[in-house]
Length: 402
Image (tube, rainbow, N blue to C red; front, top):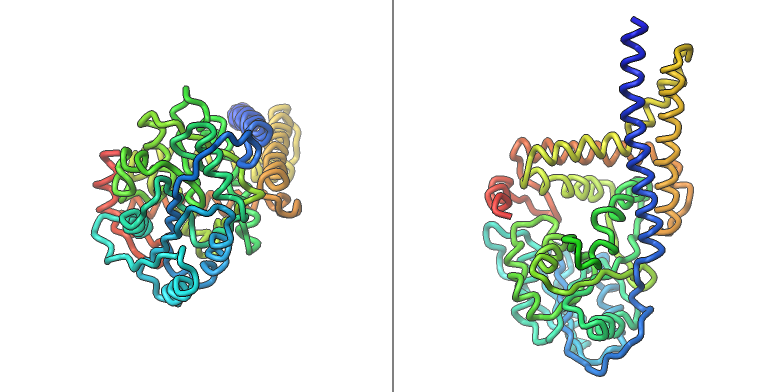
């Protein structure tokens, strides 16, 4: 019996040591990302051109946020731009608000999106509808729940042209409103500093390409070259998929920090948070079920498993050496998870430190949300997003070819 216990303890200890190693890597990646990611407003502006910018703003049921977004876009210090606002079959007062702004401001061009064709995600279709009306040489895509500093378009155009870029995306400040989002987002954000780090996106030798949907600007010809939103029409996370296409096509792209200039809402309430977590896992399963399951277990072990192991190891008498080593390993792994949450909370999200202390709870929510998305994709159930249901069958057929 003692031998079996030792084998069990040493096996868990080996797993925990691996988790510790992974968190050391993640924390280093986070710190490097915060230290070395360039800023949107810190560069030598050598641009002497003033290309027209078409801001493409899709909106569905955004009556709570769209006025603040439009106010921030109308108040820009850049002169040569238009704001194309697309009402995507809203069921609230969004359309009325759009037309009210269009009546007062000539820069605002209102569009009512035609009914979404089968096989399209709603936002992707709305973006395509906006593109068809765009007259600018540069396209700036943003979201209706995003607010922009007065000089953000000038900075984006200057950055794009000064560095001769084809595309530029800015990392926004993620706005949170409720307790559950505040304790969950730090745990999710830690992973963005590894695979989707700006340092990887900005490295031509890396294949990583990614856009933040709340703010990315690119040349119109670049957008057309990669197939526009039609090329990612079935993608639930369309901004990431489009950024990937831009990088794979060999275009010069860059990601910068704009969290002091751009505010974007990540999740508005518990329901939105839950759907957002499921939305992250479903595309992975549609592309490769085995890899998605593997990623789920990796996330579960990295984010949550050390906490219950540590709690259990404290609640039982520690006599065997293997049990003591297990307890110490679980304590170190749990401490590293806390360290990652604290760094992200203070340096990335700029929210109160107390929310990082709920790391075990936030981790559990992430794991359960991912599990729910995995089970939903496995059962081939429809996906709910922004008040619409999307057929899993349609998205499975389309995702296979990606």
